[in-house]
Length: 181
Image (cartoon, rainbow, N blue to C red; front, side, top):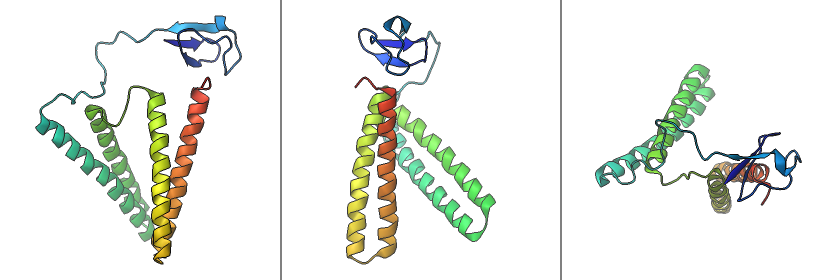
């Protein structure tokens, strides 16, 4: 069950509301049961393609692979355009990357394999993934340093730090959104 604090909007998950809101410190009486959903005629659904013909599912997975690759390619092209002094080309490449990322996101939703209905679960999974990526990139950066591939080391080492920052930001969000745990 979900409960909402009428004072600050904090949402609590549990059988009964907490005695005190962990955000604004309002008492138990400030909480109301949050209805489980709106009565809507239609909406997006995770995993709508799960039970479809294998040919369709496989084609969707291929499209996902292509779209995610295109995001990286467009962003790399944007960086190259900026280096050449073509900011308008860089902006176009960045916009196209965002559109391809949206395509990929819709495909992930259709497939329902890399996303969950629970924001908390999604946050926890991303923390684990970012932590793993941090470790993997750091290990590869160390190997590149050992082999004296300075440019590769520098890029991977910086990316490993980015992955750590991502995990920290996600972890901070969990702590703020779900303070009862």
